[in-house]
Length: 252
Length: 296
Image (tube, rainbow over all chains, first blue to last red; front, side):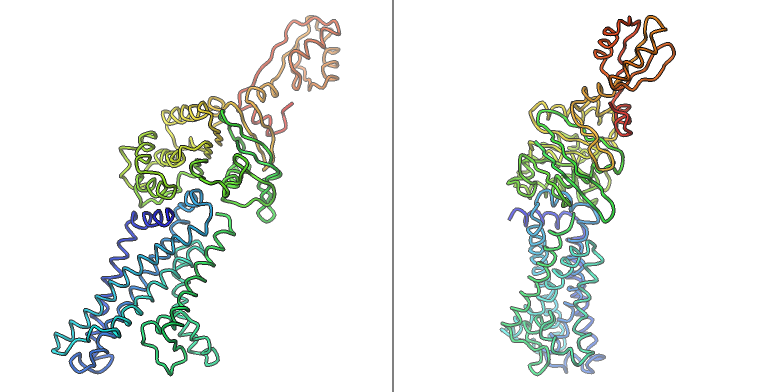
């Protein structure tokens, strides 16, 4: 537990950590507003004409930018250790490096959960506000909406941890960002090759979409909530485990 | 006590540390000497478990670093003063370290005061001079009040007052019975600070022991026979006893023999001496003599 607290102190005592968290929320809100405002262009319907659920869904796309910013934050938590040499005192204080990597993942994950949850709520609020301004009824706050918010918020958490794991593996912030963004792009690549569609339900995006309830039951990547949650845990464990294994195996 | 046994580190074709064995005893400052690239930092990193040895072991109190129950309370180390995030304040740098080690905030203030950084503790490390970073690194090493202190080039970037402060600090730690192992390229400074040294070159052990003994080993004798006619006979006898003898004006320069031995040889031969003097080199000369095979 001391290692987790120590990693939290580290994350909060450099400007980039809190600044990126604020940017992740602010940019999501701005993007949500942009997506809602551009419905007449993208969906060819005004807010007043669109189904309320579609308006809120459009607003929730704003969380994608949260995922990108939190990926950078996660990668910075891992990469800056090597760039600044802080990894040396870190490993001297905690020679069992797996504990360090797991503690970093817990801290990045916790920060990402809070930031993504706030971003998801604010994005939904943008959608609801737009509906009210257009004179439409807002989407009722029920289980479906809450599941959508929670599911959408898992994406940024997943990619933030992926950024961290990539940075620990490559010992660079850039490597972490590139690795996580690569993971983000895998579903698109899989979609280009029909034979690879079998892999779709194994990808992290399937877990996020399954949890948020937006996956098409007839689609290749469809997963129910429980398998989606298991898949998410599997990806998180696999990424953090691989990073920890490499950290233990290599010279500091 | 630090025990290094058969320690070897190979990077591809490069043998950075080659079958190195030595011990560092408590209660004394032990200097770790070697030219740049001799393998000092690599050795220290292996002692601290940061790099894995290709062969051999390094233990502290009989245990590998990673097996220590409370590493920071057992060993305090400074390897590189740049190992701190420039965007974090000095106080916050020590704070995360203290939290990781389960040490209270009061100790952070204590070590900041001890190293003379209390006034700059809330400035970002990026604005520190190299000397201030050294002090911050030393503060980190002292955070756990450790039994073993291991510092790599702690004098770099320090002004004369800072060097004097480190010297007194190291002596004080050794006087308290702690094990103090410190590398430095400032040989004269080591001579003033350390009682023992470990000298390495190209990753191999060259010499280890008390500085006084090492200086004695590389001492040069000046021997002059009272009767110049007997100089040749004296030279032959001293060489026969293992000395490396060179003519030097009207006398001889002898390496590799103690003055007592040389005097006894002259006495046995019935050669009266006009001069028998020992010239003890400084640590710098001794280091170069050892490093280039000039030792006895």
